[in-house]
Image 1 (tube, helix red, strand yellow):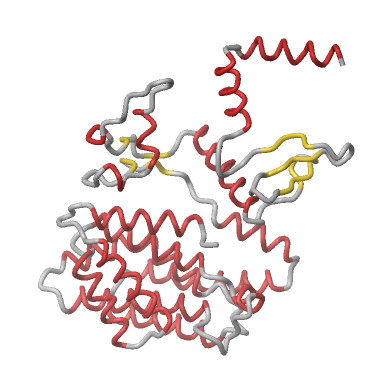
Image 2 (cartoon, rainbow, N blue to C red; image 1 turned 45 degrees about the vertical axis):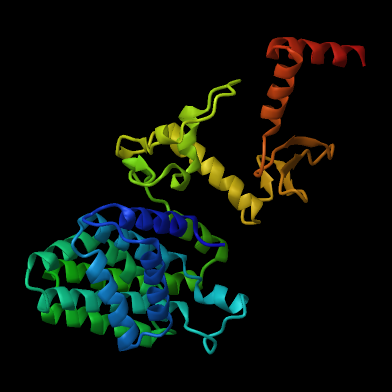
Length: 353
């Protein structure tokens, strides 16, 4: 299953490209970009790199917001690629297809070609300075991901990365302190990976999760402002849903929700993390025991919480439909009972048993 961060970054990139900044990019051209990028990652030929670069130059380089979205997407893509050990488990060996280290290196080669073009083949020097300053934080992570391999086992990978940094230093793409930072990141990533290879695998997993912890930031809006109602996320319908109302929703009144950009509220962050834990559990990636209670998934994809001693179902829910609490509430509403009356009825039933 694709990384959650990658899915979010891809959706954010598409939303930014469809925004008129200065002109919206059609969906078929966005699909074309992903196809060109996939080809460049699999085979880093001059033709594939130049075609992908040409697409970026024509659709993103003139917008700071789009350059930022591209940087975030490339970082998410590089991070979501399966590690070398995972490839072997899945049956993808070094001799079959392009390995993850090579794909991560190809992302850097694509950025190198992009920087070279904006530096030497553009009439305006502002595009180079603007794009490099925006991409700097993302480039650090991309170099770290590409060099997060044992330097002794992947000596060729580290040598190519070192040559790339030397090339950037030669052409003055970045200042000396920043290039020194890149070299430090490459060296520390290779050393850390060598230490992890000799340590407990469980420690590696926990450290890997810690690296992916990033602050939650609220967007300015939930959906593309110019998109029709049927292309907006379903969450934008919530303000228009009235309880016990038979009136239809006016499609013209459905607009993207507006948020205050910045760090997300703590309660919202907790709700998102709980939701993501449920999703991981549904797809077999979450823990089998939560707070001493055994967790299982039935045939309908419903998480079942069983008491280990009694073996009875303590709690259950479903990812695909109504929650049990909501079903209970609707049943009470149809029967005309309030929540307090229903609880009293349950107490009487328990006493009379």
